[in-house]
Length: 311
Image 1 (tube, rainbow, N blue to C red):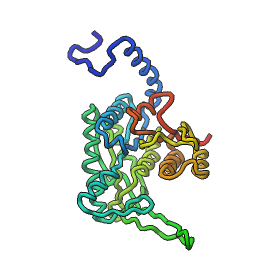
Image 2 (image 1 turned 90 degrees about the vertical axis):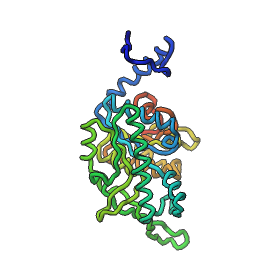
Image 3 (image 1 turned 120 degrees about the horizontal axis):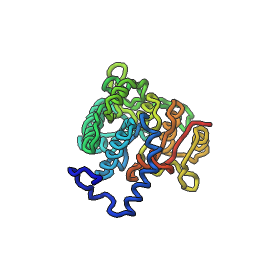
Image 4 (image 1 turned 45 degrees about the horizontal axis):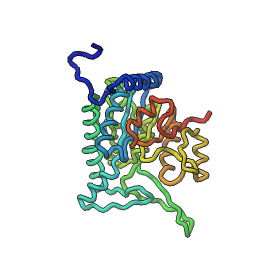
């Protein structure tokens, strides 16, 4: 028998010769891509619909385990905006937003840290461990992984044309990433799952955008890929069709001419910054698609929009 006598057959496995041949073809296509990512770091920003759906969360966990088993080095960075909002509402703590960013006072940041570093982080860790992997949860405060500074934003008054500084409270941005912490995990085959919380110079706790953290970590580790799982298929052209590949200069032009607009702009800018910082390629793809990570890494067609360095 090909199978170990002590193993049980997977009830979801292919059941006929045609299915077996199809599975073999998929594995054959994936093999050279598996070799490409062996020993390479892949930073995955996990959030949106996929994180809130129990079945999709199981598939994501299996993808991370498989990536590790074929020799890749996955690093997961997660968000949690909806869960934070729900907890603040439950605790009757009012939230205000400026340009889409949550104004974060000390009371709010305590809730943010509790939700991100607590329930969300540990649920992701538990999912990966249940799927046969070995994951450990941490925040940017652990081991000084993320040294942060206060986010500085300005906004121009349309009437007076005067720029004013926006005070978002304890909202931060990465100032320095300590890659040695992540190198220790890589050497021990442990997958780190990171909550986007950073420590300020005076011990303050800063809430940081998860996309920004993922991009900064990808740059600091010189990752082979940064994968941003979102709730859209990727970057779309003026006709609504998926753009499969963009060079940095093309991406900047698409922002300038309005092809890329709204909430997609900061995601693309994060990808550009990561690529300019040494990441081989940054991908924006739909996390609602089953096995989106594997489709992007181990198939010829990929799963979204990849942003690459200029030639």
